[in-house]
Every structure is written in C-alpha cells, then in structure tokens.
Image 1: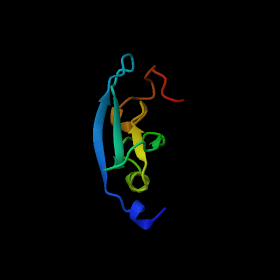
Image 2: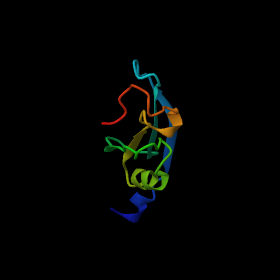
Image 3: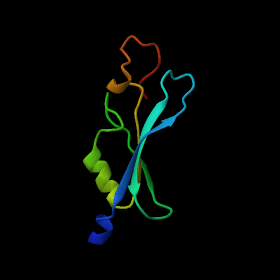
Image 4: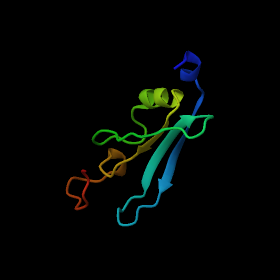
Length: 93
C-alpha cells in the first residue's frame, strides 16, 4: 500500500438510526469511510462492553484512511442506552 493511499480523506456519518422493533431502542450506528472509492471492503467493528459508536475513533479512522468502510453499531448494553442489569432483554452475544 502506498503512503498516499493511507492518507486518504475520510468522512464519518453518525448517528444513522436503524429501526429495531422489539429491541426497545433503535440501533444507532456510525459509518466511517474514504471520501472516494468503489467496491470497498467493509469492517463491522463491535466495540467492547458498555461502549458505543463513538469508541475507538483513531483506530477506525486509520482503517477508513486505508480504504475500508467501517460500521460501528451501538449494542444494547452500551452505557449510552441507560439499560440496567435487571432489564429482561438479552444483551450479550
């Protein structure tokens, strides 16, 4: 990979709301990608426990600058959703 490829300009769009009936909270995602390109590979980056779509920005930006589209979902157990441990919905994979 050439250094000019790694220096691509990127864009991040957030939050993108994905309806999630039965979940109680719509799914919020962030998409970070190069400003140009076609047929780009996609990474779905699953953050760690209690994080959200805003975590790991330097890593995600680096992947996008290298030519990947990165999708970051906010899982149900994110602190951002304010769901407590006694909530009956499944939160873990």
